[in-house]
Amino acid sequence: MPPIVDGLAAAFDLSASAAGALTTVPVLCMGLFAPLAAAGARRFGESATLALAVGLLGAGCLLRAVAGVAGLYAGTAVAGAGIAVAGALLPSVVRGRVPDRVGPVTGLYTAALIAGAFLAAGLTEPLRHALGLGPQTVLAVWAVPAAVALVVWLLVRSPGTARGGPRVPLPWRSGAAWLGTLFMGTQSLLFYGALAWLAAVYTRLGMGAARAGLLLALFSATQMVFAFAMPVLAHRFGRLPLWTVGSVLVTTVGLFLVALTPWPFAATPWLWASLLGLGMGGNLSLALTVVTALAPTPRAASAYTGMAFLVGYVLAALGPVALGRLTDLTGGYRASFLVLGAVGIVTAVVGAAASTAVGRPERVPAP
Image 1: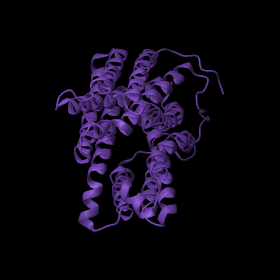
Image 2: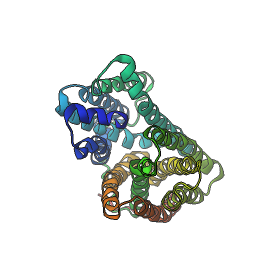
Image 3: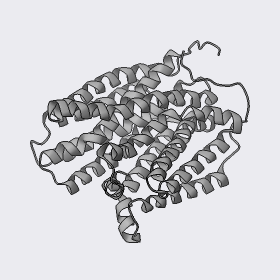
Image 4: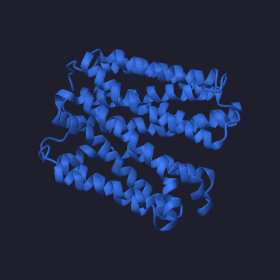
């Protein structure tokens, strides 16, 4: 959506706030609908629920390409709901099928998620020109990967967990679940805050829009490195808290560097964006690994992830808005990135506590 949001705003005469909602709505949906994953898995089974979620994603991609403004927003919300259910259910699938390799497999699919987002952002505008489509119609193209994924899943899936069984509520009374939730929420806030304002920092300092777009592309591309590597290293060498703190501190250092020394040398923006990307990728994959591992059973993993997404992505959606307000008040981006750096320090502490809690028995009260 971001590469064509200006074209959509011009086509439908959308205000800046209305256009910004097109990227905020999916993030909110990812939080609000994530708890449905556990209920769906209990009613229909994990495999069937995941297939339904991917089908919902494809349907949302088609809907947002038709029916004008109403279809644009409705389809975006439907796609966000599909992403929410699938995203909350994947950790449970991983935990149930490869319990001895949760970290590496989580790193693999997290890197794939980042790669998919990177390719979609980079290819949408070229595809629009190549196919001669409008800024709304081209969005239908992204129903194709969802359809392919659905067919592949239906061909290779195993039955997964059986339907029925005891209801697994969201673990609101679990201290470990709250640690994982806060870790997911704060690292998500760091990511969406940096994503929203990193390019703006440098365009205000004189960088052209095209180069700022390349800067964001570098930020996205470097995320794949640590997203894959960090869980693998933690799995191989142990000491999960050490890898967690290290990844968050890489991010935090990058945020403070952007705030305090944004452009002393020509290569500085590219170095800082790379540093931020490396840290952000590791943060996401490690947060998913930690939340999944904190759950006492594979079935409970979807409930733990649902709670983490519900709180975490709602917090992440509000973060850029609050930082934008701070930017308006201060007249620049330094204060916003200093605040993000402070949140990074908090994230390192919370992440260390959450990863330390992995493997510890916890007395969870019965529902």
